[in-house]
Length: 66
Image (cartoon, rainbow, N blue to C red; front, side, top):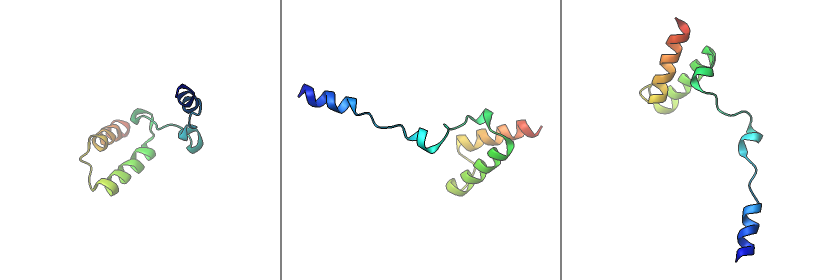
C-alpha cells in the first residue's frame, strides 16, 4: 500500500499554464484595449455587465480614460 501511494505522489502532472502561456493578468495590469476586449467577452458570455468582474473592469476603464 505504501509503495502505491509513493508512486502516485512522484508522478505529478505537468502544469497546464506553462503550455498555454502566461498567467492571467490582474485588472490593474491590463491595457485599455485588453479591458475593452474582456468587457466585450463578458457582455457576450454573461449577457450583460452586472457581474462583479465586469463592474471592476468598467471602473478600471473609467480610471484609465480619465
